[in-house]
Length: 325
Length: 255
Image 1 (spheres, helix red, strand yellow):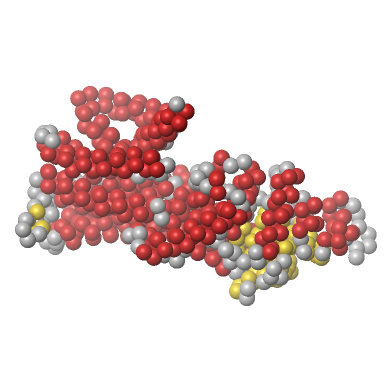
Image 2: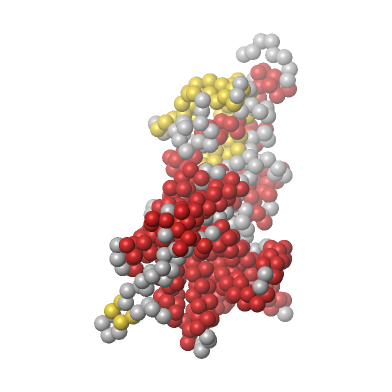
């Protein structure tokens, strides 16, 4: 057990060091961009994982919450000249509150009915972005979103104009989120969510208010996606309805499933893997989606618990082998 | 301690529980028996809040609980097990117990997310209590085993432990001996007797007559949602209506 913990700590330290050093490794800017996209996707996959992976309720509205965060924060910055540092939390809050509002009636629905309702909601949100032209400028999107304001620490001033600077901003947010996320899923909240996924009647009888925890997971997951939307808007500086589609929700879902749902490492591994894969497969042009689909098929078939699940199984096997030797 | 008055629930035209008056005293082991379909599990579901009664009242320690949500009933001090085991199969023995303890933890959502001192204090109190529970049931070694991998008898025991983890005053066991072999049943009998010594009030539905007759202080017999007899085991064994209900024989002069 102890050895396993040590190995885990080692992997975490190496991963953080790698993430911090990555932009300094002399890769082309294009790869730093892929790095930023990976970080954003990790945040999105983590948000979905809370409700789908832990509580067992599949949602296809994640891109909508991502979009609400992006639009709310961008509009606050563009129209009311708010600072990014105020607009971003508000974007997150808006997405979280909308999720609570949607969750109250829909989280009573089970399985496929809930999935369909979130899909419908996601589409409604996209159509609002597209058609509320007086506010969102419709298909033209919102250009000219300002970068996050510089932060002065006295001896040094941090700016967030370049790719590398944004990379570090988003990485910092991710690391803070991961600590809180870890606390959450290893507390009684995480246990309650997993219990709900296993058997919700028994969970109720344990004195757990099932509806409250379902909405909590949905709301926190949506707020996390909203925050990601704000970070995205501050990085790309332009948003349009094309980004926040059902297709994007499905991508987030695939990242979570391929990585391994109901774990923390799963969404991280899955998001990096899929982001990288989608980019590198651009050379295959339209065959890309065929390869992508085939890959999904194989992973689901042979690694039902995702990459994280497979790695855990392998390490258990290696340790069992060592014991025998 | 628990009092049901004129309790009724109808599913369509069928009265699964029909104007039932029923009372349990603090500290007793009460058996609830009756043929299949007589309404035993329905009564459990009514008391634990899974069903809402059509009419009538349920009062627990002076508080009305009819129609309250199951989680509220549990917090009021009633815990139960299920006839068809409902453990959290993908979670370990230890995690099942922690979930059982959930309602007694006093931290709020922020304490959990920021892992405050209060949260850590509450969790360490819970761990202490649950370690004792594990020891009491001699399950320390199985702590990190997934619940679904336990043998059947131990799954039943874990369900009882999980219910005890919320420190209820009334513990309701729905056919705890179902599927157990005679040795396991004997062990279960000892454990239920111990529950009484620990101060729990126990309401147990069971078809195993040896168990019921041996451990219950009093027995209530249901048939077609109505109470047909109530008394100490000896009285119930000799009760003509009970014999009639079980053997299906016509009763001419009921006592």
